[in-house]
Structures are given as C-alpha cells and as structure tokens.
Amino acid sequence: MCFLFLSCTPLFTSATTTTVQGLQPRCESHIFNNGKHYRSCKDLPVLDSFLHFSYARETGVLDVAYRHANLESSSWIAWAINPTKKGMLGAQALVAYRNSTSGVMRAYTSNINSYATMLQESPLSFRVTQVSAEYLDGEMTIFATMVLPPNTTVVNHLWQDGPLKEGDRLGMHAMSGDHLKS
Image (cartoon, rainbow, N blue to C red; front, top):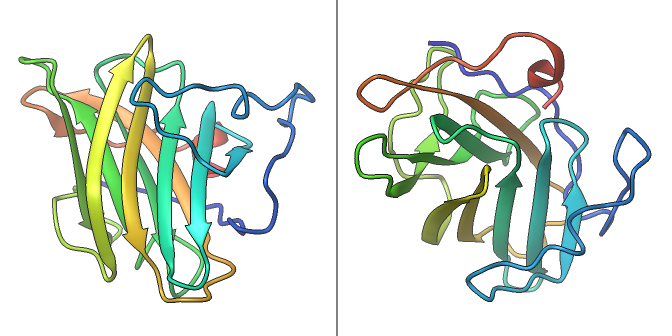
C-alpha cells in the first residue's frame, strides 16, 4: 500500500486563515464535546480538515486536535509532523479509525519510514501522550499531546484520509485531486 502525504506548511506561523473557497474559517467556532480548548486553529486548505492547537514554545509541548469533516464511518484519518524534511518519509503520524464491529474509535502513532507503509502502530521520534479519537456526525477527530524540541517554530505537517477495508485494514488513499495536495 502506498501512503502519500505531499504538502507541507508551517504550523506555528499564523493562527487562522480563510479557506480556499473564500469562506470564513470554520475552526474558530468549533466547540469540542470533551471540553478541550485550544489557543489557535487553522482551516487546512484541502480535505475538509481543521487543526486546533496550543503550543508552549519554551517546553515544546503541543496539544493538538486534528478534525476531518464529511467522512464515512468506514474511513481512516492521519495527521503527521515530519521533523526533518518535507514529504512523507520520516513523518511521525497520528492515525485513527472507527472499528467496524464495535464502533469504538482506535487512535495510535505510526512512524512512516517507507512509501509502502501500512501505517502500523509504532513509536514516534518524540514523546506523544493522551492519544484519543472520536467520530461524531460524519467528523473524525484525533487528540494528542506531543513534546517537540523546545523552541520549535516551524514544522512540516501533513494530513490524509482513506477507506477502511474488511477486517479494519487501512486502504490506500486516493491518488488524485486534493489527496495529492495534503
């Protein structure tokens, strides 16, 4: 399976943006069911995605919520940071999907070291705690706390979604359109 993340953009450079279609940002008005609040949010330009985060530069602690709207429950999502370069190889991912039998969300980390990744669970190159996910009204969200090197000001981040196959196997994402821009 090929898992492709292409677009990388600075994360900590602006708090909000408008969407490509010229609509007002949708992240600022979002209220999380778990009561979490984040200092910043960014409407990502493709795949109906939004990034909420609070970052303590002096300690490197990044609290993040990655939201992906308009999804079937039989989908997976991933959001990743590549700490060393742009692109997929070396990306440190948060992955989530909804178990097809129980309906329970599964969230975990995956170190992407191959273009043929199956996004198998593995530790990341930095500490990650409190990884969880939820699926509500066609929207999937991953929550996590990461500890980046102190004083990090720019990261390459990537996001993606794809189908969930029989047996809860992650299927390959689309290889066209917005999936190549994320």
